[in-house]
Length: 616
Image (tube, rainbow, N blue to C red; front, side):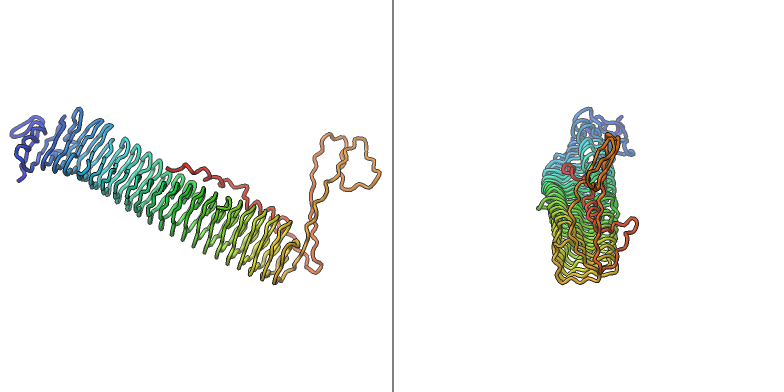
């Protein structure tokens, strides 16, 4: 049988003048007790033992327990608190030292201390309650939190540590000076929660923590929305992030699974994996990331499947000895490159669609930089669908490039392998190799290029077999300078331009061409023009050619214009004059292509090179 005790601040008939006297009376009876408390301010430190319920009779905040120093409530046994306001300073306001504690419709204010401390082996339930200024600490305890609010914690709002197991549902955390929820060497579940305004990661999992999040929302945070570090694991599902520095971060051996999440308007990155972090990301969306939507750096190795990237700067960047496997990506409407692989990184892209981005895949670095792109379509690009420079190595398989400037380009000392790929409707060309690069292509089809289909320039080597170049305005295949290679079982068709224009360094094996084949050895560079400075009139004793004469000038500005005289095959029809704005003249193509490949005028190239320290 539950015995009832009444507390009134001014006493009264059969009423206790303070809560402590009622607790002593209940302890003497050794049974379950209900202590009902009239509105008032009670400057007491309460120690509750046994099976006791403390219930306020007034409205919210009408019963205030606020000792001048020390803990407001020490709980031992089975304790329930309902409708009280508990206030403390610089210590634990509520301390559950043993047994179970339930706070229901209760408010706790900790000025510089801890709102609730659940110690090892205890169990604490918090329902429909509010906690201000201090943290709620579960240290080796069990916890259940539902429909609670945590405001303006001086450090972490909720800390789950030392093997604790805590479930937080339908609750709100805002304004924490450090983390909203921190899970360290413990297990925690967050369901339907909202976190906002934290100064560091809204949710942090560290030291082999296990974290599960479902249908939560994070917005307006100064750092990561969610961060996994130090070999933590977990599942994040249905998370929506708006206005965070980084949507989700993974580092130092952590390996979470992230599904069906949306990261919108992140100021830096949407998904950020670094320092040997891993992670599986499935069916996620990243919208309008400030720098990079999906970023893998410094040894990161994410696995990304079925994700969509729209708006923002760079789509996927794998840099600084990182790795990544990406399948089923859709990347749209960026201001920078869709896919980037730099600096000894390795990436595999499969079943990718890129639309309306300045560039598709960009690879740059030493020989340890590799990328493989399979079953992809890149359309509506302003620069190159694929650009490979440095000593990087890239393989393309069943890649379609449509409606852009340049299809595939490889330069410097890089290597590009192209298998069963198509390029159509490009303005500057289908595929080009320059510098000392090597381009190997099998089953390549280029259609409708406004310049050339295939180009080798400088000292590049091009090995192309079983390929077709159709309706290219300037030339199906063009080689100049010392570029060389071979064409095996290739065809050039259409009604525009020449079929093959080469420099004598190309082996033509089983070539079929409906257009002329022109061989032209590059002319030696002309000798410098003679300049005669004569102040009193010229006197020539022999024939002088190509001179510049100036009278009474102390300074001379000289400009030499080199004209390339094309020697057409007398059997071939005259070439059409290039249209205004066209860059179809074969000799001018290498300069245009090198500008496109090197992309000297872009301003986003180095936007992520200094990101190593972005997180955590």
